[in-house]
Length: 475
Image 1 (cartoon, rainbow, N blue to C red):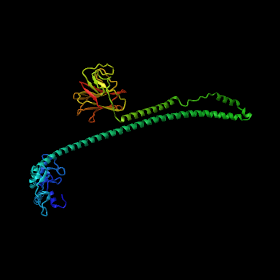
Image 2 (cartoon, rainbow, N blue to C red):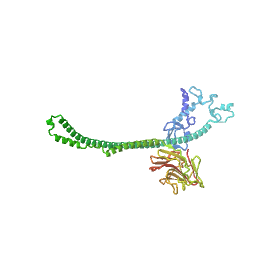
Image 3 (cartoon, helix red, strand yellow):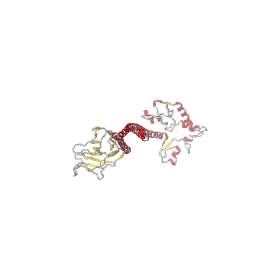
Image 4 (cartoon, rainbow, N blue to C red):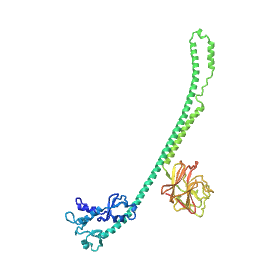
């Protein structure tokens, strides 16, 4: 809009932003105050009136709140009368052909521009398809409305995705807050436990220290009495030696008798600290060795378990059922109809179509993934190294599928899954005594087995298939 040109400004204000023509039966959207042709709003909104929004500002609008703008309609009529001439009597350039100074009443569909009747007769548009501007306006209105519907649908999908992301992020944040609280609780409980053990052990050491002090004081007191008696006799003898003859020989027999009796007394060097007390000190020393070892084990286990380790699992051919055909890389297996001629060694499964992973675990956190897509009968999970290989179905901590149904071995629980997982992630937390199963592609928990005890045994990955099944370890 050209600044300082009131006629042009007035024409712009009298133009509908949808059809770009002068308002026809103008209606005002009460919520925002914008004006449009009644037919333009009806065509744009269509049947989706419940989700109506202002075509200009996109604000929410209620169809029942539309009001006819009669004053604007009167202004439009006035603008129409002066649209061909400006305030100085000249034609308004924006509404007429710049070349021929005629009204732009036609529309060239080839060039997609407004033209006048003179342009239509010119060589430039001689072979072009030209229709009345009002007719073209109606066609483009339909196209705009169709495009608007598509854009609204896309906007609706984007808003739905935005809501899903916000909801998902909130759920994840709530989960992290819960886990954060668990970490704080466990660490504080561990600190409290260590502080309590420290108090108990220091109290034990202090009790031994008190016992040492009591034994020391008793022995020193007894030796002090003995030493005092000797000191007194020694002093008396030394004085006798330096006395005159008459005094030295006075009561000489009694003095010699006491001296001889003291000489005859056998001095036994007392055991200052009894063995029972020394054993207590050695016990404290042994406790310190235990603490150092336990601390090292705890640190090693914690450092090892802080990061989950992706195990490079391979299948153990010595444990595989004779009908299981293992790939050369020991990463996949197929159940064949005919059994292979293999030795019936103690490690081999003879009744259940199963195989163990070659790798065992003695600590830390480990995971591996198995592709189960399009397979109807399988078991994947964890088994002890000592699991029974002969006869009955072995005891394992596994998730399995039979037809369309899922189940958990170890708890014998049926499991309902919302979708068919393509890859199963088996997660083993050795120290935590936990085996978990996830949909590896969606990172969603399928089931968790807690309080799992390996009783000092070594857990191994476990796999089984039925009815010509096929399983493959994910790289």
